[in-house]
Image (cartoon, rainbow, N blue to C red; front, top):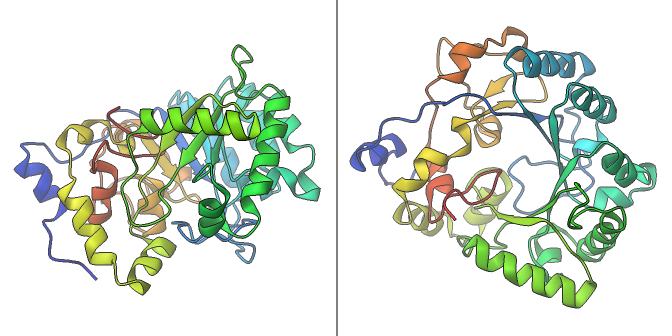
Length: 323
């Protein structure tokens, strides 16, 4: 139910900006399924252990073909817990054979699941960048968002990654941490928070990492339900709208990213995917119909949730837009 605030396109126009258009495809972000070993309060995917939606190997093959056809340098694998897809490792190996940079959006606790004990080693052997969620360096805040005991398991997983060289200078193994606010607030400045994370994780647990991304919580799916339950939906949306920063619009991730759903459907971003907001009319609808030129210059479908990516310092799957 929409709150009375200007449509996103209208707000862009007021700031003298053109409607959003893609400027190439540098990242193919592939959601390989909604199955997850956690059920987080803020999850925009509504992922969990009971979800059946899983990408097939056939669809993954089409994704690999798109990487080649459009010379897309980065494959960004997300979920759910992407590692629970039975074809995850095959996809990773094939993309690396193509010389692509591969990111695994990892919830950390998956590294401790009995069936995944060799996962950390597999990621290191294939030089996969690990992008890992850690909403706080304090146990209480992390467990409140992600579930009882998640923090302790996350720290153990980070130690394993560090032991393999992840986050260690000169190792070539990148460990990126991701911060989401625990409640309906905008993230603090990324550089300042990264400094605090570095200091606290090193002092408390001896953990090192490569960089930190801050991501604004999107008012969709589980986080939206939480806002509605607590009566803070309107307040949060107004906060996003009033923090609109026109300088972030040029750098939002949808301009250089294409999102693929578990079933092969195409979207402008993972958030649009969860809202079932498909690509603009006339564009390819499915990865099997992938065509570089129309997709690389497409006009972007927007909605009120886009205020989340343009509030404050901006936000996206690659962290703050203006640092």
